[in-house]
Length: 114
Image (cartoon, rainbow, N blue to C red; front, top):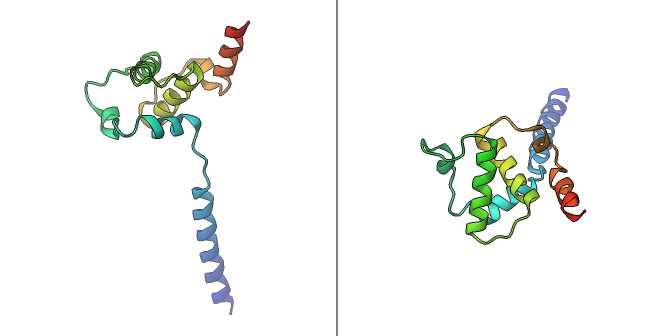
């Protein structure tokens, strides 16, 4: 009886862990990238030898350049979110202090409105 209970708990534990992992909400940057960029930009583009993004400012500039080229009309906070997603996923560049804050775009947007 105790062995059956143990096996049941192990199975339930595995299912709970799998469910917990499936409930991870993607970031806004990941959603924007998946929606607008992933069709043309495969994982290989981020690992190529001649990549243009060599640091955080260049990565952010490349995201901005491509969103303008695609006429997406992203705000600066959206560009930052996508660059932050790419940096976390592929590049691992050192970030300026402001880029760590999820409210960076909101702060910049409020400064623009003043």
